[in-house]
Figure 1: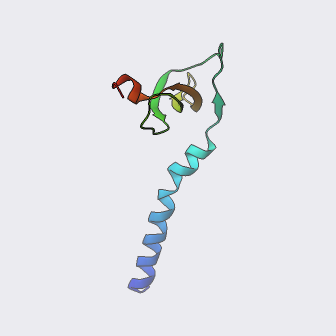
Figure 2 (figure 1 turned 45 degrees about the horizontal axis):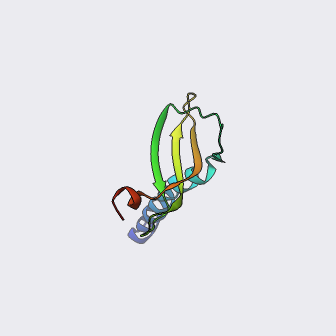
Length: 87
């Protein structure tokens, strides 16, 4: 095998491995929160929200592990983080 073939194989493998987290995130079941929704949250993995410069309601997402260890994503609305910063 020549160096170009080995380099190409390594590059392809590296790029393919980079797609695994993106594919895993896309495969996570998503649900939208409404009042009274039963949540089985054992551990919060991440909390994110849509970026904004203004104080107001934004879309947010919580990724968490349930009691079975499965990753879940919950979509909900909240006041933007800038609201608590006096913005």
